[in-house]
Structures are given as C-alpha cells and as structure tokens.
Amino acid sequence: MTSTAGGRADEPTRDWSGESAGTKPAKAVKGPNQPSIARLAAGAVGVVYVLIGLIGFAVTGFTGITENQGEALFGIFAINPFHNVVHLGVGGGLLLVSLSSHSAIAEGALIGGGLVYLLAAVLGFFNKLPVLAIETPYSPDNFLHLASGAAALLLGVAGALQARRRGPREPLGGPQTA
Image (cartoon, rainbow, N blue to C red; front, side, top):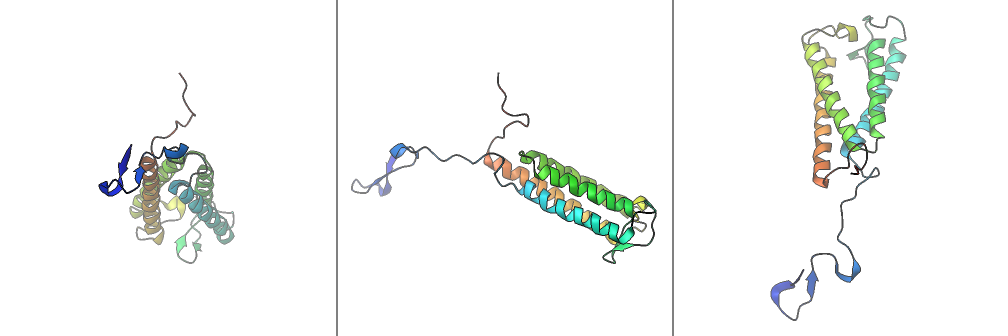
C-alpha cells in the first residue's frame, strides 16, 4: 500500500508495507539469543545467591547444620549451614533457568521463587523460621526476604510482559505438527 507524503503529486511516495524493492517487513526477533529481562535477572541473581551461599559457609563452617550459632553474614543477617545450602540451591536453580532457551521458564522461576521468598518473610515475621537461624520477628533477614521476594516477583512479571509485547511464543516442547 502506498501513500503520498503530504498528499502532493510532486513529493515521493512512501511504501509503508515494507515490501518495496524486494524487501520484506521486519519481524520480531525470536529465539534463544533474544535478550530477556527474566533470563538476565535470573542469571544475575543466581550468581549473587551462589556467592552468598559460599561466603556463608566461610562464616559458619559446616557443623550444626540447623543450629543458630550466632553467626551473621556481613554482621547483619543470621545464617547457619542450612541457610547457606538454601542460598546455593536457589542460586544454582536460577543459573540453570537463566540458560534455558525459553524465557517462560525463567519467568516462572522468578515468580515462583518470589512467592516463596514472600512466604519466608511472612513466616519469619511470625517467628516460624528458626531452622534458618531467624529467631526474631524483626530480624533483618525477614525484611531482606520481603524485598528479595517482591523484586523477583516483579522481574518475573516484567519478563512475561516483555514476552507478551513480542508476540506469541513457541510451545516449550517445540513446534507442534499435526
């Protein structure tokens, strides 16, 4: 479809379809190399959690796995070896999903993980997480879990919204044939 710019016959016409001179209209870029907010966030947060878990073991050692021995990460956050294992597991899981070719997996992991961290914050505020060495309702850990959960949830939703703007996705199992 062509139209004249300005409506005057002496001005050049512009082809808005993108099919003039043998070119095809631009299409959205799809595939595993496409940057995704969710995959990037999952990778970055995964690295941070793995590092926190490793640093935590340097502080607590490996004994008294669920006991509160009074150790604190950065002098603020109560930890024990079990808490460090949780950090390593969360970090490793996020790193794995960040490598997936489907951003929906990272989005789901961030949304689900965010909800779990929000639940951990609520349980901590009700003093129900002594297994993680969180023994007071106003522990800094509870506020960190609240902020981490909210951030993960928002990043997962942002990734889903980004994908929605880009158009329909290929099913996780690959293209379906009839």
